[in-house]
Image (cartoon, rainbow, N blue to C red; front, side):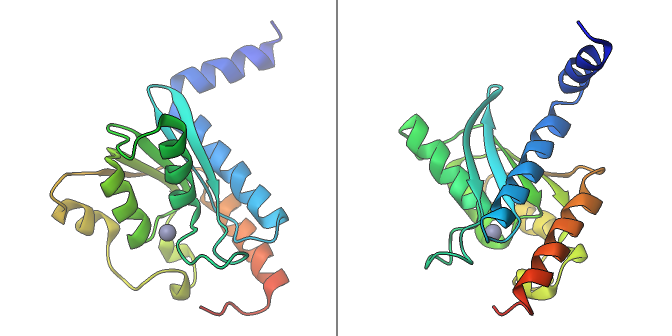
Length: 170
Ligand SMILES: [Zn+2]
């Protein structure tokens, strides 16, 4: 096995979060290429990707079609249930409140994201509500983890997308 392949496998084994978050960044780039907002997400359970999502809310008449919701919907369709108990939601960008609540109602146990909302225009979020504080107030706890190492790439994707869109209108 080539040394680089061995190193990749070792990295994936040792840092599964990094592997899956890297995939959401790839999905975000795919979303931008399709004209959508550069966000991507996936739902993981027992080591298997159950669903993936791209942001479609800017290119389709569906304000709820954020990447996270799309990933949850895809996972629910694949499993035939609306309860994805114990699953992890990986998202390139910090989820909004709608996506946090969607994860809650799906039974998701943990959210991992790569770029915090402070990096983006306030118009992309509802306001200064803290996701962590809100999550702690829910009846069932959802762990929320920021994973460093991806933010710069994600911010660049959003900036490039904004250049092609003109000013953002909510
Ligand atoms: Zn959202």
